[in-house]
Length: 153
Image (cartoon, rainbow, N blue to C red; front, side):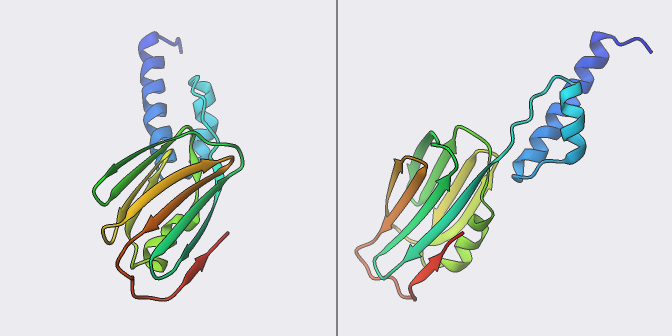
């Protein structure tokens, strides 16, 4: 079979969509890992990110520890914080934060290179990057009922 630019364009488009779909959950499809190079697509390997969190009556802290220093852009709109990183990542413990820090975090959505956090109450959020650590400091003037929580790994 002779390959035409139309065939290759269609294959590349299909592979691109599939790769994006595979990355959106932080996991990559092994079939796409094999097909992507044939279509000339470079599939980034997700960085492993460890997540640590603590909370007390007036503060909560979430620390994301990367294997390499990340670059991050942030945007805060009311109780919604958007973090966009310069690379694809995997951070499975993020899923536990809304359950474990329910007094602080309403929802967390993490896909590909982005984390979207909706806080459960109005809080001040400070984001700092120090080497491979991205720290989210949440604070409130009103005491938050609940126990001290420590998450790590």
